[in-house]
Image 1 (cartoon, rainbow over the protein chains, first blue to last red):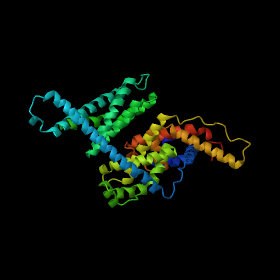
Image 2 (tube, one colour):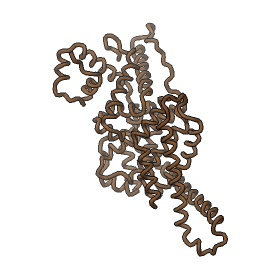
Image 3 (spheres, each protein chain N blue to C red):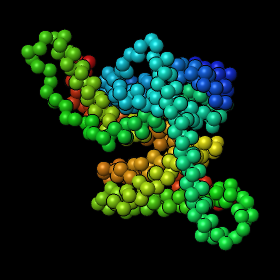
Length: 229
Length: 190
């Protein structure tokens, strides 16, 4: 006799099975499968013991109080980061110009905004490429490797993480939401890598997330768009 | 999540109106907390996740497409945020502390016995849930507790229906294995 699999029974319990027939008829006639279904029901009923604690009646107002404070802080912080990034760009620009244009007349410096943008875009493009290389190393790493992630990769991930945060904040600030979302996904993976997955299973989980979210592809597309500027 | 805000409120919030965003926060806080608690399994972490969810939602709201379902979108933000909080906590300390395997003591009064047993069940469930991967836990919580369809779960977790289904199967299998010792032959565990 062909018995339904555990997967079939799970789908049946959740009302997601194709109930055409076979399963319902089979359950009527098969005591073993009815018992199996009862065990699954019992397990899932036990999980229901985890009931969320009650919240007070003014919970929404309390949450808003906390969130609104953070929103003000966040705005101030983002703004500071933006200025910091702008200041860093100006510094970079100054260094760049000092090395190249010291002997030239001031008129050559007529478009500092454009040059600053260019430097930032080159830096971002470089950042995206380095991130891709690091992610590829993790994705392509031999599964038989004994260590979840090499210390050197962890350190590189930590450095890239800091830069990625700044780029993401800047992207939000200038309304590049799609780019910010990609950078946020990247940030999560870099955070994991920088702290080092504790097990090979965790590393596999990280690989799956990179693949499931098409992160390498998104980084390539973003990098290519940045280069087109 | 139930639709608790109007399209007008959403449109105003998307354009940066904080009063409108306040309506969203107050309207969805309980739902967000419930989901965050079930994913993190801890009240403190769930509160952190609630706050972080709304901050992320505020930042991303501009990119939210008006024609999409706001509840599903907010579910996605909540689930991802809660998973992040959970992962951060897993790194801080091991929450799978060994549990007392002994059954209820014979010397305890029946009502106390039941309370102790229920607490053990709850701790076991929490421990069992903590052994699931992020995707497994997200898929299970959204399907089992929030009663979302597999298609809605996959949209919330930004993955395919097939991957969601497999994650759900793995989750149930793991839970069954972890909770097996609690099942009494008579089926009167609770």
